Image (cartoon, rainbow, N blue to C red; front, side):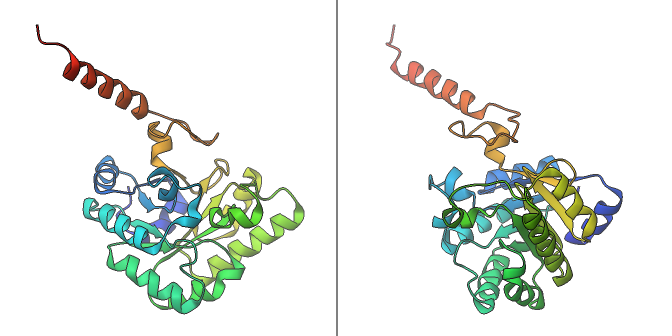
Length: 255
């Protein structure tokens, strides 16, 4: 298990693959850390799974700051990556200022979405001494512009753009990059081309690691689960059972 981002290059070379999960609060962060997870992501997916928003575009910096600080209070070892939310990195100056706020909460690195188009922001963050994680492929913060969540890397034009984005982030000095919803063969190709560790989600098994939204892993968000996420517990079912048992106990007439 990782204890520093500086260990990522060696893990890319010799394995094992990097296991990443999301956390949005103190107890989850603490339990993931105790379980030996490599990296913890305070993802803007919290918009949907915690706040009930339709997508990530409604997540604010204030929300990210509160959740990042909560997670970091529970984590002693695993590096914590914090997402820069929608409209929080419109300029290099804004990107750096908000990255510093997340780092002050205890984050080990920050992540934003985009490749070549975001290079000025990425370079400014890295120049400020802040470890940076990229995110290419399907970009949830752009879901309204793109008209939904779509697989990337299906055409030669898309493949060329993805490879250009990956090279740009790698050359800028990203320590890792998330490859989301990319055709597996393309994600594997990108992984072989960059020095940074690649973390896949819905991108096949050829990346250097995998990330999942923890409620998807635990079966605690039953209303929706992406097809690539295998639930390894049934927290929702157990919660319903326990609550109904409690209701019965409270309402049971005295004999």
